Image (cartoon, rainbow, N blue to C red; front, side):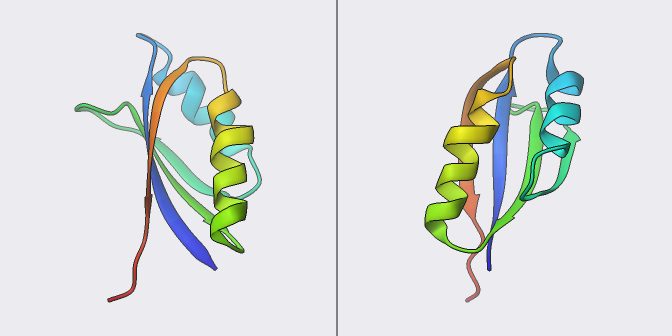
Length: 77
């Protein structure tokens, strides 16, 4: 299982709606509004890196109001 944090920037005033919409996506464990350079942080999980990429590109980035994402896969050192 691959886990990742997806840092999301949204259009002004869209963070809460984006977090609610993303929470409904399969593979998303949690989505929370935050302050700072990003507006929403998502905890995601997938069976492989390829499936993680599909989640981000095909599903997460398709949510209305998102302007930019940064995916940070979790590593076990």
